[in-house]
Amino acid sequence: MSLPLEQFRLRILRANSLYFDRYLPAIQRILPSLPHLRRLEWRDRIEVDYGFFESLIKSNIQTLKLFDIEPMREYHMDMLKRLPTESWRLRALYLQLSDFSEDEEPVAHRYPPLSISIIRACVETLESLTWVVEGPTESRDPPVPTDGDSTFPHFPKLRELTLIRNTWLLYPPTILHSLIPPSEECSLRSLCIDPEDTVVSGLLDKRGKIPSLERLELYNTCPRLPMDFILANDQLSKLSFRFPLSSEFMRRKLLPALSHSFTNLTSLHLTWDTDFIPREDLEIIGTMNGLEQVWFSAGSQTGRYYDWLIDHQAMRETFLHLPKLRKFAFSRDSYLSTSNTPVERYYFERYTVEVMRATEDADQFLQGRSRHNTSFPKLCKMIWEGLHRDRMLAEAQKYIEQLPNHPLEWIYFGQIPMDVKCVSGRKKAYPSFHKRDDCLTHLRKMFNWDTYDLVESDYYLGQTGNDPGEDE
Image (tube, rainbow, N blue to C red):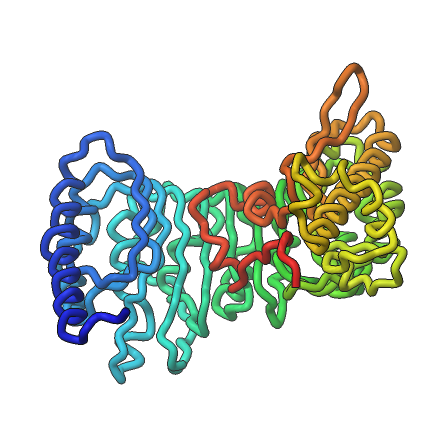
């Protein structure tokens, strides 16, 4: 039963009053009075005024995440005038503000002014920065790249930098030159960035080798890779490409360079833009004998259907030459069943020949449930999941047996994460969870995004993970 309009309006007014007049001010008052508060994560789409930022500045917070915060438009200029230029002693910052003006002044509002002011305020102490830049819906004239601006200070303690761009917006060249200064002034250890931005790509190639850089992650499709920058930094230990690359490019340019020069490389993530991985590419990867973990994928990287029919035997032959390999993952891999089901539909076909045969002795798949209380479709799904899990465990056991001297710890394929354990003197694979999982969060942390554990998966490539347990 719906409320009368007047009663509904009064309730909304009362809720607004409680939130803005009591709840939010109470939080703002208490934050500066908590002497041991070191970390705060704030998620709220409600508009905030300067008092919100003032309470944060006066607190003892060292790690701060501001997710989807929207400063009040009418107070933008006032906030900019009142924010300190330097005094916010943050060590780690995840920043995502909707702080663009909708005015018709593209030059004045080309960049997010409040975000830049906040970053500038903690320039002396900031060690880790994740900046999600979201621009206005309407495109404006792009900026012209400029040289560094000496008026914007450098970040002497910055070690981890992640820049995520969700719109057409180009990063302000001024602040980019400060975040990624010349190599003799740069202390970055980890860099995650979108090279599609022409300002970013040009700056990286100009910077060349950054001796302190250990981890590099490039995401989003781009018209050209900053190859001069990549090849110059052959001291990297972790390298991750979060977008598909052509096999020809990898075989002719990228993989030979990695094999020949990147002697410190221990972690590699690659995705092929074809629905298979050529053996020639795997042969080159097999020469990188310092690798300790790899994450490979191929075929379609969006949607519910996976078209990469993985060749596990080719992978095992490659891994024979990687004696230090501890962890490996294959995502969006698929398989064939005996029911002539297309490889793209493997994870959705429940009524296969194997499943129908198994229904005759289904008790082993019911996990304590009564067969009489289980519908036939649900029964078939449970049987399929059990058969698939057993199939993946058997495949994993082949890796363990054919790589007996490798220090394997963790395996992932078929959407099944598996731990390798030694029981009674024999290594064996055990499922990490009771059901399938896309493991995206875990993989992203493992292959570089462990530098700041508040990174949101929703802002990674503009995609969210699909639940692999869902049927069509």
